Image (cartoon, rainbow, N blue to C red; front, side):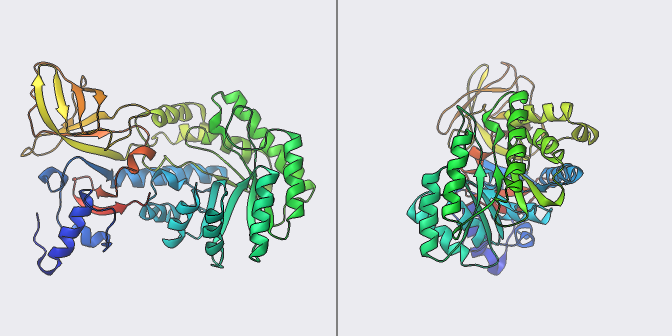
Length: 426
């Protein structure tokens, strides 16, 4: 590992954070300072297991989504709950994002404290302390915030709270479906919400319509739901229900964003409505559910199809072979504490033996069959030349539940050198 002279104490503190020893870095190093440390994954300068980000693939995914959204003339507010990493938020904003989507008041506070100036909280704001957090954030005149409403009770609570503080909260009407999650199901509920908002118009400003199509599985049902959102937006605009402009219309998770873009862009709203899509997992992608969803997008969407190259997995977890106790089985120093397992186990992608020149693709037959807290069972061929101390790089499924296991993730260039470090705030 490189010697840093007077910076040795900072380097030691930082590597402790990279090794999950600390919940945060007291001294956030700049990328050039981190690169100057001279760390390289292949030189075993990082303690494994370790989650890492691939710089080139992050940049590719940022550029891919920017091109896709621009082709439809829409806005992007990526869901920050996926990473809860302000440095990645900043990359997304610099790549043209309209704002950042978040799910809770705490997440919103983290984003605002790290310079995010516009947040769409794609969730209901409920509870005194959560309302208080947002109230303090609204004291910043340069900070824009939106949350969702779907009931008269919620609006009554929000209206009274913010009226007492002399503030006006910007909200979006959330639409929902039977059997789904939150959101207004029918016309009776819709009118109830609108009536309540009218009572509290001094403190609650209706600014648009929101929905989340990911609660549905069939494309036909999703298209019908999207059309309902278009129709309700048009109806409320004609009735002059929206208090502040431009009107916002928002949808899209990471699996159906192309269909959302197609239906919303085809509605013909023009400049009167600003359409904001919210996929979050595109930045790191995965090799599970989102890879399957992206493959379908590449097939069915003409714009994505013309772009040829799709999204690439940019998040890996590296671990050592810890034991080869019997033919056909290797035990890896990787477990549920290190990587998501709810949507598929990590997939062996790269193999590296310390002392060799570069990693090789993992053998086709290698497969994780079971994960415990700190161990993974990997199926191998009886004659595979696998040794204790070999390093395996795993692609993962469901990035959201891998990011939240790591306080700091090193960013690697194509030569596996550490060029940056991304801190998370869960």
